Length: 346
Ligand code: OGA
Ligand code: NI
Image (cartoon, rainbow, N blue to C red):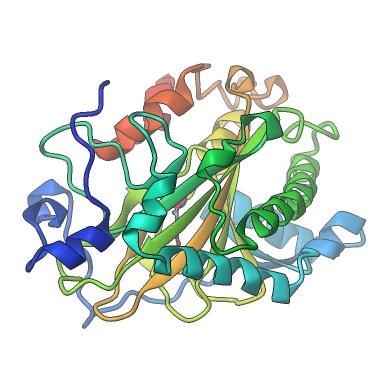
């Protein structure tokens, strides 16, 4: 669908408007109000996986079971010993903060154009009724390298491009290790998940403080359209929450870890054995928060349940949908999960 209208960045709203505009308000009738601060949800016990052990196959049966159960119940886990230096993770956080701290006019050089997702700004607006997220973003494709749009890659801070390139390269290694371990945990062939893996996009998220945390949300509830997503969280400010059963839980901050979220593509490839995690971001009344999310995608024509996971006891749950990535954002903005469209009801 065509974009109806572009919207201001949240940073501009904060400068130009005296009050938070209505279109940021989420009322109960629109699917729920953010949880007020006086009843913060409980902390989620997210399993911490030592990636060096996982890769070396010297992992104990108990540890491997912990990994497997994170995949088929929670849909998220944290990895430590992932090979990316803690100081480097801090550098990635630092370039993120420095970029968003630039004056709006400087950032607008990298503005997203029309329906293109790459660049600075915020979401495409599809309908007049669409509720807006309280977040500004910079979204860039990093792999395959030919799809990089360098025009949208900031040159300020000076180290931005170099740091992003290195981060992407290091994350690519982590991704392949994790996808191979996932395959092993299902007793499948060596490269089941990493074969379809074909691209990576990185999104820098900036959540300014908001005077109405009771009505405004940083990122509406969603599951990611990826195979897996790596999230580098803010070191000090919480905000990410996960749905478990019908209750929300806060994601803990483990500063040197990467939080890995299972996406819809893995749920579909695994014929529902692994679960994509539903999550959202709440905002803070007086603290800003940053995060960096790296979405690792399969080539879409390859996404359908592995034959080996389809049998009489586990009938095929998802059909092949080649336009998955294209319709995902529009569905998200309308409060729908695209994976529901792929479901086969038997
Ligand atoms: C996302 C996301 C979480 C965060 O970008 O898809 O869920 O903590 N981000 O910002
Ligand atoms: Ni997400």
